[in-house]
Length: 148
Image (tube, rainbow, N blue to C red):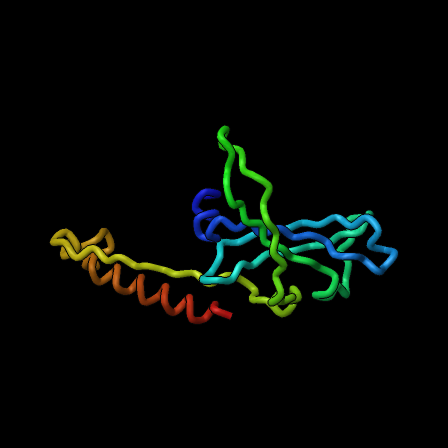
């Protein structure tokens, strides 16, 4: 997965670096970063900053963060990467937890067996194909009702 992620980022590693903190409470914050797979040219990082008591710090703004990309230009004879070059990310967007989507979207694929065995009756006396179609319709209705 890391190799795939590296390829998708075109050998760029996203590094989140805490900027200069102006608030005294942020003297020794704990930073938790959860990367997600890139979508197109966009990389999303879920970031949580905690104080020394493990309490989330509220009121952080884009100015409180510096995000840089690291690009490895070459490797030496032993395969060790050379010193990377860093570039600042200027189009950083901060999305607060209450503004982001409640859950990720899901893609559902439904496969329906159309073989001859589906013409047989199930133990309740219903043709298997008809029972499968009813189950699919009920699932779709359930998804529509619970989509939120």
